[in-house]
Length: 124
Image 1 (cartoon, rainbow, N blue to C red):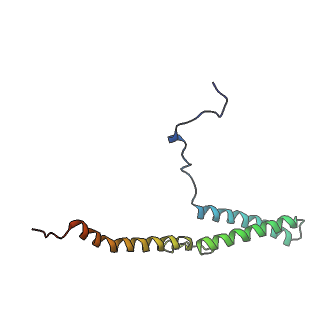
Image 2 (image 1 turned 180 degrees about the vertical axis):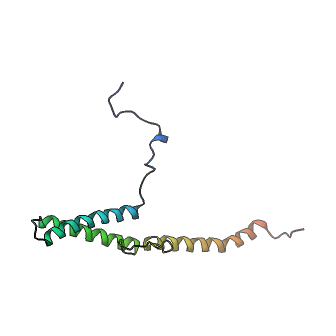
Image 3 (image 1 turned 90 degrees about the vertical axis):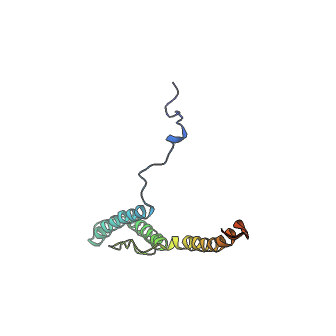
């Protein structure tokens, strides 16, 4: 027997986790946790309790960065109560536009290619 952790599994077992979260939901959850922590620290600071102001500042900065990234990536506020399933995220629009342009070019070439393949003979 070898050392623990040295077992090599076949490729089929080295798969990623099937329970990965959606990146949008993961970022939204992180923002929610930071928001709760900021709320707790700020309310204690507001009531005059002794709070580490450095920690409060770090939490605020981190929260702002995550909110900015979310709004830049997904084009909406992470605090919106209703997620609009028909709205498309801004980050994906460029890829879809390129794909549509490529497909349009391909579709216009298909009839011309079909004519070349079939040749000048007529159907009987």
